[in-house]
Image (tube, rainbow over all chains, first blue to last red; front, top):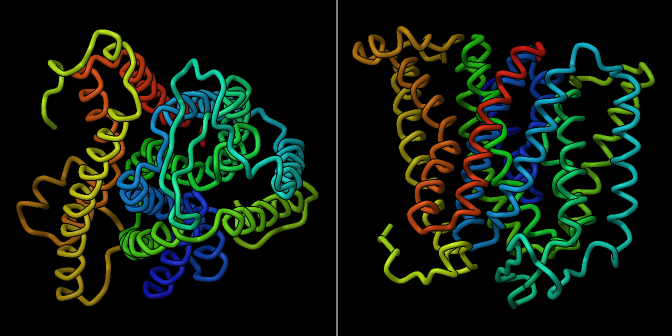
Length: 276
Length: 133
């Protein structure tokens, strides 16, 4: 089982690092449905692995100045405030309706992302009251990409709503942050993935400590998961820098489609193997 | 990180530009690399000792109250537990370092942002405990 966990975690870490997701969206269902790990143990191990994967890939992205630190801080505040609200209301929320609504929102994001013009071209001029302008060298295009994040207020508000939904439904934030930054705020997909990768590690810390305090961290699962995700994240973050942005968007859209369909099936009462 | 107060103009002290954020990125990258290196070295040591001891990994971590004693006894699972906890705290240490670096540089806006992030990140697990997730 440990070898299986290591291999799948490496795959999840690589894919997650490339598109700015934590990787929990892949690890939890695979660990629980195919490797026989109890779901709570899988969530706990995946939580810790996500931190290590985030740090591992963020190291590469930070080194190449692809993480927009100030934008990450603004969105971290917005998302975490939403997640706090969601976590407090989790017992009273109508989960079925929320799952369906979230699924529809994710489908909408896929449609918006598929409209290339809406998400591919960054804005390089204009007002920047929060000082969020940034640039990075993109090896895939062989030049420096500059951008000024747009609609920051609406983006932060959307992040709060997304954080609220993820707090209620227990879904990681990366799956929402990257499309939000890319589609709404016009941040290039590589910078969005790098910024989201950095953010994920920060948001999961509290949960990981709670898992440890509640004896949900099992070394037999967590140790290979952490090692696997670290190795995968190293490969994924290097690949992510060199792969063309349009490919990253396609991969992200596929993952969003998978997650949206899972949520919709759950909302319709159809069981999905390994889903939370 | 070298002290930079003397090279910063009053206008820059209110808000840092891309150059300082770039330096901050490099600093965080170095910190994360070092932190992960230590955590993974500790984890690998625990893993090797554990496999030598009984050829399998443990089913439970060591509780925090017993961790110092278990570490003193050289228990492999204690090393693994310490490594996992050490790794989990990395992003928070990164935020604290960023807070300190921005405060020293006089970047009030980013310092305030990091301070608020630290507060809300600390509040989230409390909310999860209250909410039951």
